[in-house]
Amino acid sequence: MNRPAPRLHSQPHDWAAIRAAYSLWHPRTGNRLRASIRPGIASILRWPVLRALALVFVLWGLTACGAPTLQASPNLRPDYQTVAPSPDGIGKVYLGREIAQTMGHQGAGWLDRPSRALQERPQAAIASLDLVPTDVVADIGAGTGYFARRIAPLVPQGKVLAVDIQPEMLAMLQQELEAKEIANVEPILGQIDSPNLPPNSIDLALMVDAYHEFAYPHEMMHGVVAALKPGGRVVLAEYRAENPMIMIKRLHKMSVAQVRREMAAVGLEWLKTDDSLPEQHLLFFQKQA
Ligand SMILES: C[S@@+](CC[C@H](N)C(=O)[O-])C[C@H]1O[C@@H](n2cnc3c(N)ncnc32)[C@H](O)[C@@H]1O
Image 1 (tube, rainbow, N blue to C red):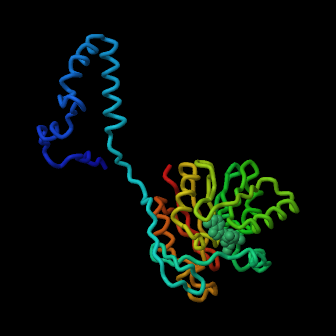
Image 2: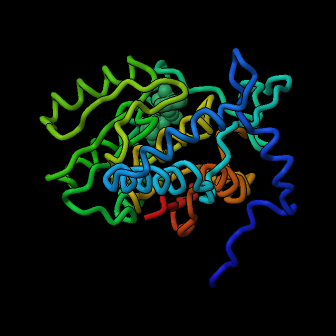
Image 3: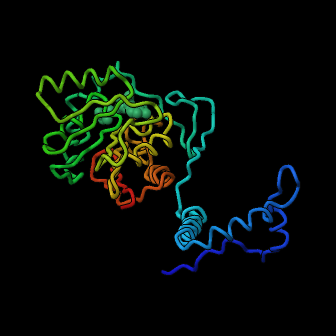
């Protein structure tokens, strides 16, 4: 659909008033500068080359400086509120959701529990990512790299960037990488408000059971979006908040509506929700191509 060009000024101009407001005054004599510079401009414009240069300069000014920015950009200002912390929360609310406490590295054993393969079907989750061998995947909130290590063989010409804020988690990941001789997983120490990834460098950002813990979700997602290549995808796996039978702490689960609200706040486009896993939603989003 062709939209009408936006009107930049809705009021008719009072040119006399505008001229009066913007005219320059000579600092010492009080005479208008216009009067003193007019003869100089006239003599410059007598030379054809200088006339052409002046024209280029004016056109550049009109296009580069004068052009209004009409592109919609997502809200850059995070909107956080403070509440009394819930037993599993940090007392900070983002778009109606209290942020969960971070799972400490002391609980890392739970991430690698043998029952996880049956309980969560991680291989089915990975298959649904439709990876190609050259993909660069960022596993953000990677923990011990349960997913990063399983994705690595699927991207032999690409790599996995495993980001976490706990050095202890990354140390355990490093041990596993060496033991299993996995060469294409790169551990990256992130910050609580930044994934520390280079811009336009990743095809997919995966966050498994991690996003709800980000203490600065808005800033983190801005970093993720900047790190994605155009058309790159974001996938979140979160335990279903809509289902009270799923025995996971309240703030460590998320509803589809809430995830979509928070991803929309950083300009990501929703692609699909896959509910084929036993306990988690898989939500797919895309950065504009
Ligand atoms: C519950 S664990 C999940 C680990 C892994 N994704 C898995 O499924 O095995 C969540 C992880 O997110 C990490 N985390 C929390 N906030 C983070 C942030 N802002 N940036 C990166 N990682 C973060 C925690 O340190 C923790 O290792």
